[in-house]
Picture 1 (cartoon, rainbow, N blue to C red):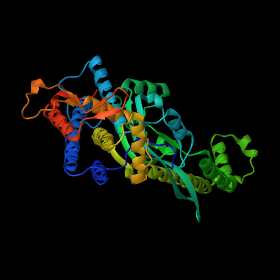
Picture 2 (cartoon, rainbow, N blue to C red):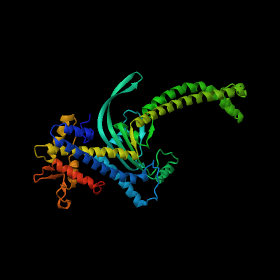
Picture 3 (tube, rainbow, N blue to C red):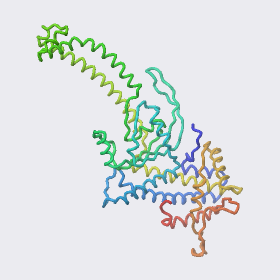
Length: 447
């Protein structure tokens, strides 16, 4: 397992709430109040991420390669760029809140240079991309068995990315036409120029990331070419030696047809056989069948190898695919919503039940220690995100004998003069959330 600690909390929100309730620090009515607080919190953030998702979907329609709806009018260049920027902004926003990490260019390049499970020579032209982003979550090592030779298996330690997300925006049609013209060939593309493709996969070896790109070019490695070419040359040499007499007959027959008698004299061939058309036809047919059969055999071996490679790639992508294109946004928004809520619940619970005053750093350490003690999970808790969220959630605490206009807004979280964290009591926190939920349309969107 990698020593790198991630912020992702590998636990369902409902299970995390139950874990807090079973901790024994909340008693009596506080248990029910805490559950109601968590329900209101979840509903509020569900609403926020729904608004975010709708903004992304509305702007993504233009770039969706699977879109089955049409716009009333084509956007101008400025509108086009604004819509593209909105999609990418929303994409980054939900991934960061889902505690995904952007993959470095160095790791992606390394996947092109080295091989892991699938022994292919690959090439990806990154110049085809107008925009490209790759995020991951979960970097682990797995020991697997691979077939080295026919009866010998080898154990390999493989670096696996548990979840990986790619966004690729291809350049326009003009770029690919110019590219084909420069190379003097018309290539059939596996994608639509100008569209934005999203891929969501699970359990992908880090060194096989290149296989996820739709514009990948594959070919045999030098080792496979040698294994294919050397036996072919070895088999062709004795075949050609056996075919030499037939080749000479054909050559002499051609020279006789063009009256090149002087050339015929220099070749030691029975002229009677040459003048008899049947031996020539037999020689020609024999040579054609022999060489043709050999060529077909070698080509079939090559295609068989190529099909095997393609099957390995297809199996990798088919069985490890989670979502594509528009559905990726929905899946990531659900994950981001869960993560935001889990982080806030942990922060609020530990501030609520702590006997001591806590700074942000002390609270961060306390939560990480609690997760280790309860679940044996070593995470790098992101304290700043939930603290900012709790500070931004502000509402009025209204009792039955007060008028709303007489009460100031209260934030769920504030700081005292010593920079210690202070939260509202549980009952008042629930009332603030209740007020916020009643005025939810004032809090939509993302910032």
